[in-house]
Image (cartoon, rainbow, N blue to C red; front, top):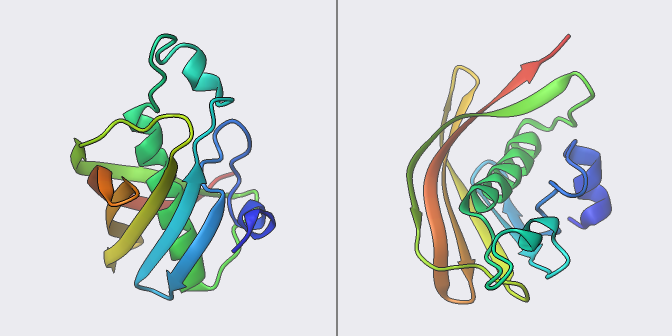
Length: 145
């Protein structure tokens, strides 16, 4: 899935769109996606000027966006302007390695279970063979007025 297809699925836009490409998708099971980390990202101006590091919360957001793409693919839906995909919870988040400009962040998300409209995912982000972060994510889709 290229950036044009991702833009049709996710409502996020610059600077908060954090998935550049989907590398693999196993319907209803897992997704592997890519975030290219560039020095031009706006958060690097202040986080940190002397040693730019991608904020952990944005790594979690990137994983959640990949999870949304997996959920939409699994349900065969394309969300509209009245559909929002929210975090419902984040458990066991761990940050193992800093992510810096020039890194390619590989987002690997697997569906653990879905019940009553709540999706639970096991997610990890890595750079090369090194894990950068891992977490258990809970997300839900809601219609808004």
